[in-house]
Image (cartoon, rainbow, N blue to C red; front, side, top):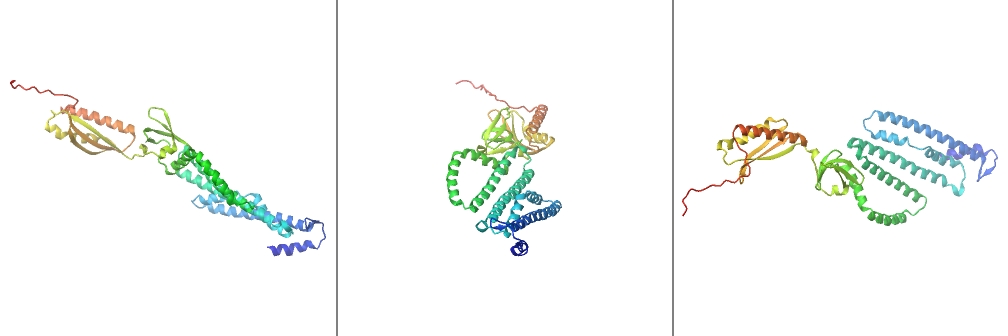
Length: 363
């Protein structure tokens, strides 16, 4: 390329005498401008054709990665092509001590263009991931945090590369920033803890918007997950605001993710109940539970003897974990037990005391 520029084009213009400007004749400057414009439009045309072909190929694939890459390529700035054209067109000029300037401009613009490409790719990948794994729009705050942190890291690296290329001592600069960063981090460590906790909640998903959870003695439905706090609507109506870092430090019970609900309940009958009825109680309750929809009987046993009752314990499962469904089902079972016990003359026990009086003569 250098041989072509220095031999073919320059010789054509060297035949003409011209005014010298900044060490170069007007013919050289004219050749440089012509080359600049020609290379610029040639690069733009070739790049546009390449993007069109890549876009056609990306439409035939199922993955979104190639679409993201095409979007990144479309963000190529005109100044990037102009810097490339300037670098090659300047080879026909004798810039002397300033001969490094075109390369320096190309290097800096390349750094900036790479920053734009990487940012677009990062945003596209993060957006695709968020759409696939995060159906709750209110969790976009955490996605915005990730996007901001990603952009900050990308452009911090670009800035450091640029400063290093300009001759700045980056190592000394990083050392100074490191000390200041430690001081700032110590001052805002609680805020940063909640910030990264919000990101952890989004990535790990221990709960989502609309889930009914219990954490640290607080129970309710999750209304929103913010950058610093999570807001929970309790069963009694008030809104409870909990720091995200406190949520991650506690054990969270997520009731919405229950596949089945295990129910344990007990029945107490009087000691006057006949042996026949005592033997039949387990089968009676088992039959009542089996008749209900979405239930699965587990076990039933005569558990023990209380102060005023013979106690039974029963366990069954409801295949629909919704709390309202559970309460409706328990109510139907209880009413059915009352009806059957009433027909069979089985009495429920309640706290009583029986006094036995002896007829033996006093001594």
